[in-house]
Length: 307
Image (cartoon, rainbow, N blue to C red; front, top):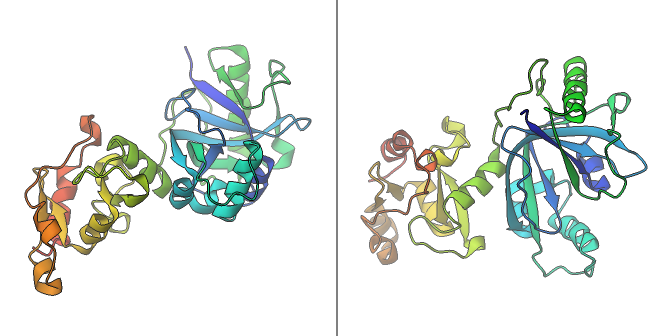
């Protein structure tokens, strides 16, 4: 049956902001409408097309995840890899596309996040003309399949270019010759944040708080200590609990119970709200593969928790 590829019309400012960067590991290709995106599975290719009349495919990335977030939280997760220099600039672009007041600095517009890893931007001589089947009235994206002629040609053309050019933003060729296949996305910090937010149903795993701006994705084993950007290495916590977790004043045991250190009382002469949560079972993601890794929890208990 083949695999899918999406060719999406890029925001020109987004493209120009990111195309010359060589340090990118992930980008957020956001949509101003905030609508859902189900055209790709993780590991399929998401390609960028310039606005008409520059009808060329100029880069892409490996699709990792999609969700909807207020623009302020999308900025917290991805920063300038949203293709803007500031949240204000990002909000102004969203307002332009939504035909809202460009001076609106209050509305936290919802945006559709399409999280891409291993992004690449082709040198201009390697840009690929869009297939003949691309209709002039397409304003968002079109899906192709490698089991069909146009999709197969796109895969082959992208394979050739990535193998013979040193592409900006890609440490190694993303696409190789041979049968089209899924590519394992290498999740970054931003993708980790949005993924953990969703697998916990946007609720704190301990308190069930659901005020989204008050919630943060915590690494169980920090990335700097060998932890991965995976849902199984994450917990969605209320912001104060995240700080306490990172500081070792609270933990989650390998049997998924919340544990509070005596050091809160000893050092701060406070903490009754936290001690009220002592021993409580946390809420777990529905999929087993997303649930906290017990070895990572043991690591946190042994190396971070103050006891």
